[in-house]
Length: 534
Image (cartoon, rainbow, N blue to C red):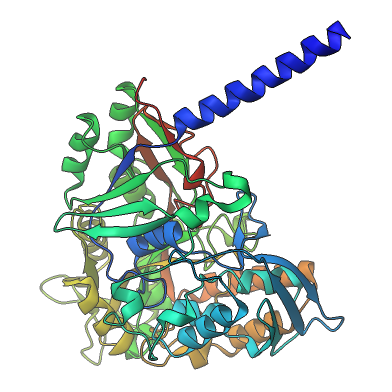
């Protein structure tokens, strides 16, 4: 009895101590840096905006979400069932989940969010749910989705990872950046915006989120402040001087300095890559030999090493290296730097002569002179260095490149809507489903769509359609790996690299990125806490 009493006392002591530690951990303000303000404050009216993605991860939830193992787990969904023919999935939602204004979340919010996505200009969100043919409200907590084609269960779940909006805050569609939900966002996640200033945004813990599961859901930190500073060098100094706690992305040359100064450095994966796109509306760029020659002629390995301190991986095709569809055999590897092969291809294409300035010309007087349209971002000194090397390398093989830098919104309009470019420097960010149909399916070339290069290849179209119709997981992998090889050979892009990313934090931030997914920086922010006694 005495032994049992002692054990019980020890267990009680541990519980009390753990509770006291948990209580001490709650509170404080976390400050992190961004290079610019988000262009919108909800997850639908913003496009191609990584700042918005990080911010809305703190504020919004979906029925399902990715975990650190890249598996889809339930969030606002409690359970689901898939029909025997794999056309339908019925989802039952958790009861007792609330928006930050206290209104209970229901299946009507899901249906309204889908309606808002489909009527919006957000191509990325639309492509996620493009296979949903019908949405049926069964009751306030149950909703059924019917897909155009039978899909594997895991693919269905991935398509239901979009963030939900409150139906009672959506008055008119389509949503714009002037809509009420965009100007005054309301979510169900960890934090909500309480103030917007000229240089910062302040978030406060959502009390309704904290009350879940007996108050064990977090978040532990009371407030989060997003501080906006365009200059990366100034961000580094702010971190060193304890003016901010976290930098979401640090340049490779700063890693060693910050690590030596005692800061936490955490690498994290990004399902993204950079590329230079060819506009197939331009006659000369329809010639694959010219596209391949430009790929052989660009010393990408040197650029990755010299400019990015080799913090990344050269890529060979349309899937990022982290994807199961990426092909790693030698025959399908990245094109090597080979200027002699580039010159051979250009000569074969009829461009054997050069003008006085060294630009190659054919017997019809057509010159290999192109304009590269590049988006401009505050604090980005890497892209200009990449384009400078690209110009130099192309000059060596007889191709003249003129660079046009545009503000991002102007770049979007000129490249994605007007298709008014020769070459375009761009980046693509994937979801885990690895769907390249928006990029390369010939029917996806309308203004604003992702196939802004007007690429058309019947073999690619056929493989994409087969992938849509196939349920077997191994067959889907085989199809997309075949697609990877085919697109690599056809070279619609100069595939560049997938860059490693590193975040930094001072020692007062505990549990910092002990769990992080490649999809969003703040997925597990509710587990972070502040200790000022470090």
